[in-house]
Image 1: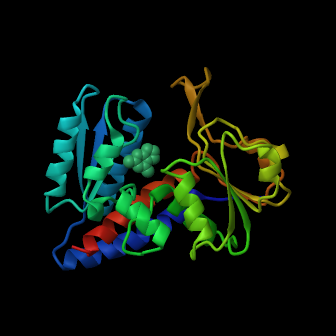
Image 2: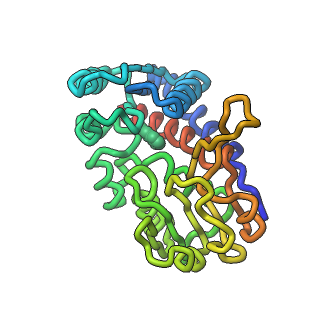
Length: 288
Ligand code: GUN
């Protein structure tokens, strides 16, 4: 069983970004990323902080905008509008999920698609479906695909099962795997899937993105399958100082005994998401 090292592959992507950033700087261009956080969700705070720190490490200009949990829809829309008009900003990311009173779809639609480095705007979703390379591909599924490719895992012709149908991971993941980059045969499973375990056992590649701690168990995995765990779940752990530990959507220890390769949590998909975000920001800046 191979433990897939997300940090190592992410570093390769980061190194590619560094050389592209150096080339842009020669032309007088510094890529800029704005990260908007509405509210106090502790996990979102951690993600937003990590994104801003990675920007600093790479020499990407980063602007972190934090709004209180009771910020109005109009306030958030105004922030997005200002960033759309800011020539120093190539990428805009509004951390999901916002507080419940915020209409997230309206916020995403307000972002200039050419600065939508998350790839969530309908224009970029359409471009993903159309396999139009001028769009931005969502960072987490793109990171999963890159992880498979750089680990030497053949997706072409493979039977892939994506568990979860979210707009952030499941749907774009299925599109990437079935498209010309992945060439896999794809099944999308979700909470209403009948006999999910049997569906999963068909898979050469399982992508777990359902947001349920340790949901995928050994009986759902074929011998020799590859398992990519997108989940980041906080579960109580009184032995930790923080009072919680992070686990994925996969019961790692038991599944690891059956599969040929698996990503750990943390240290698997997480670092790839940030690396692909940096990549999209650099791509955006290069199109200025
Ligand atoms: N929340 C969880 N993942 C993501 C992501 O990739 N982008 C944004 N904006 N919010 C998220």
